[in-house]
Image (cartoon, rainbow, N blue to C red; front, side, top):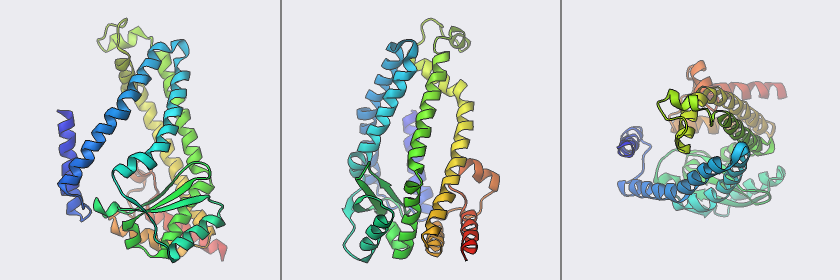
Length: 309
């Protein structure tokens, strides 16, 4: 029943809300195809993941949290490896960016920053939505950049370069690595705390279970949905604040590259196309938005420009 309600919600958000605002480009056939693929991937990847996690907790002994962390670290690296090259191509088509001035400029920018760019793709995001984006992925010296085709339609080449200057700033300033390290600390802290409660018969009895015979999956769910939930809210807020700091730093990096004007106009165009909230309530955005509001970002860039004059 919950799955059915979730699918109804997805249909409503996609074919009513998104369509109402002019974003949805999906057909029902594509929507159903995506859901079938997602369900299959959940069984193929999610099933073994949960089974192994529960097995390690059950058989890992007193220090099972160490083995759980090692498993989650390996799984994170595994997913970071296969998602861009195996899973994402199941849903979208990736084609090399055609030869031309933009391609030459992007490679020149990558060389300028010593970014080991190997491949440059255009993704057919427009077959699902008119939202736009760009992202990078890859390990070591095998980096790749992906541009949504919608991004290329909404902004001009110099603005694309400025946006990539921002994204490359995240790489140059090691934000991606820092986030990965924070995530691993989060996993370690969460399962270490869980290990302190795992054998607490009183805890399970308080929820109406026989404290001596609680299935491992019940123990995990009880812990993360009750005891850990308040801490998770605090940690999530801290990570959101850190993300906002990173966004300002990446903007500053692009400004230092001399791309301030193009980044500002590019961000304005994207926000207008995506109907983004440019100046939401400060406290609300501080808690909920991982990216600072556009007005704050533009103001910060203008201040930097004045300092450079």
